[in-house]
Every structure is written in C-alpha cells, then in structure tokens.
Amino acid sequence: MSKKNKDVFSTVDSLNRRKFIFTSGTALVSFTLLGGNAFSALPKLKKKSKYKVGFAQTESNNPWRLAQTKSMKDTAAEYGWDLVYTDAAGSAAKQVSDVRSMIAQRVDVILLAPREEKPLAVAVKEAKRANIPVFLIDRNVDQKLAKAGEDYVAFVGSDFVKEGRICGEVCAKVMNGNAKIIELQGTTGSSPAIDRGKGFAEAISSFPNMNIVASQSGDFARDKGRQVFETLYQSHPEADLVYSHNDEMTMGAIAALEAAGKVPGKDVMLASIDGTADAAKAVMAGKVIVCVECSPKFGPKAFELIKKLANGENIPTNVGNIDRVFTKDNPKWIRDKYGELAMTAKDYLPEAF
Image: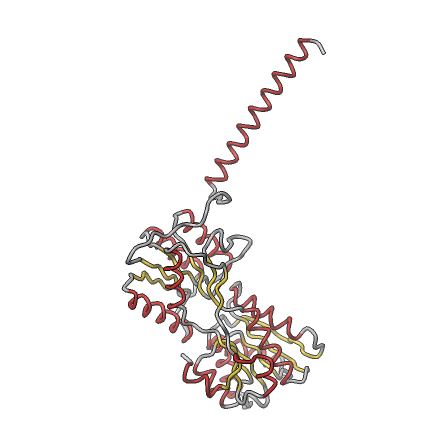
C-alpha cells in the first residue's frame, strides 16, 4: 500500500474513532438526561432519630383502605415521626402528582400504594432520581418499567396470585368442578386485579366445567360491584358462582342477589378476598363459601423496614404478608391443605378490621 493511501486510511480511522467517542458520549448524556439509571444505586437513608415519611394512598372509599391509612397514622404517631399523607381519590394521575409533591417537600422516604401499575412506575423513577427511597405498599408497579431493588427498595404485601389460586381451589372443591362463574374484577390495570384473576384462572384451568361466563371490573367498590353484578347476572342468569376480587364488591353482589329474590350461598355461591368484618359475618351466615385474608395493617411492617434501611440492613425485594383462609365450618380438607392458615370465620371475626 502506498504512503499516500496509508495516510488516507489513517485519517479516516482517526475520524471514525472521534465519531465513535462523540456518539457514545452524546448517547450517555442523552441517557442521563432522560432519567436512565442503569449505573445508579438505590437511594440511601441517613440514620437519624426522626423521619418525614410520605404515604401516598390510592383512595379512601372502603373499609380496607381506611384501615390501612389508620395503621400508617397510628404507627407514625407511635414512632414520633412526621407523616405526609395524601389521598389520590381513585385517580392515578393525581397519585403521580401526590408523589411529585412529596418529592418537592423533600420527604425522607415514600410509602406508595400504586393505584395502577404503569402510571405510577413513572413516579417511582422520579423519586429515585430525587434520591428518595420508595417502598411499594400492597400493590406493585409494572416490572418492565420499574424494578424492585433497582428503582425502589421493595414491595411489601400479599401474594395476589396465591390469593386467587386459593379461591379457585376452594371453589372447584365445593362446586365439584362444575360452575358457571361471574368474575368481579378489581381496578383495571392494578396489580391485585391482574394477579387475582391470574391465580383463579390457573386454579380452575384443570376443571373443564368450571367456566367464567362473564368478567368485568367493579373497581373494588361496593356500589359499582353491585351495579356491575346486576348487569352481568341479568345477561347470565345461569351463573351459580361469583368470584370477587375484594369483599366490597362481594357485599354489593350479595345485595343485588337478595334484591332479586335469590339466596346467596344457596342459589349462587360466592368467594371473596380481603377479610373485612362484613365478609366474615357473611361467611358465618353461609352467604360466602370462602374468604382469603389480605391484611391492611401495613404500618408496623413498613416503619420497621424504614429503620432497617437506615441501619444499612439487607432488605429482600419482596416482603410478603401471610394470608389466612377462613370458611364457615373449616372442614378437614381445608385444614389438611392450608394447615395453620385455615380458620373458621368465627375465630377470625374478632381480628377482622
């Protein structure tokens, strides 16, 4: 190769290297400006005697949410910490705004009960960029958008898939593998609605005569659950089983059935999740065949985790609650399958919130 050609190739190579360095640098700057966090660790929490804790509640339209909020407020008072409390009133957009307000107020840590998985993942990442650690309480965000141990510290709550699976297993046993089912779903896009539906579907998948004939969101609300059930039942009067993603919608369905002259627990069976006092009483009365507990008392666990984070202790990315199963008579097959988790509604009722 001639000296002239070598000089040309040398110049081109030098230009390509410069172009690569410039392009790579630009990409890195762009990644940083866009909020990339592949190279950043979780925010730390400085150890001190008192913290300002933000609790972003999703709504306060049912006993479960009210009990959860009370648990947070009571625990904050017990610790002597400041609690910045917000209520999104059922709006994912407002809850994102609530989190941004907490960031602006420079809270030390945020406890977030995400109304929906996708919108609140954005808020989680914004808190991380502001160097504020986040714990997700009772609901999760889309793991493709924000991940535990990377974008937030941990998810604290129940195994929603397991809750749905238990309901499905009990229903299949009680109904002898034969049922036409109306499913009352929770809030569309929320992790409990997605996972409780998935778990139930998995449990009944091996029973070809267990068929969901209608499924619609009742938004975890009693009156909406009643209205949705009325409409679905009118279209599917052959339905003999209701699987409801929470107790409030279950109580709405019971009201609709009784208004139609039907006997809950006889004409139509019902299965529910949460463990409220109303549901426990309905189980005792024979109106609901099974209710799986989902405790709202997150305060003690959440505040304990905040202290552990400040102490530099290792925190698992998933901190689970233990959900119990209660029925009216607690037959042997229930006890054999669920062991210490099985209890009668009568035993559970004094603990119901």
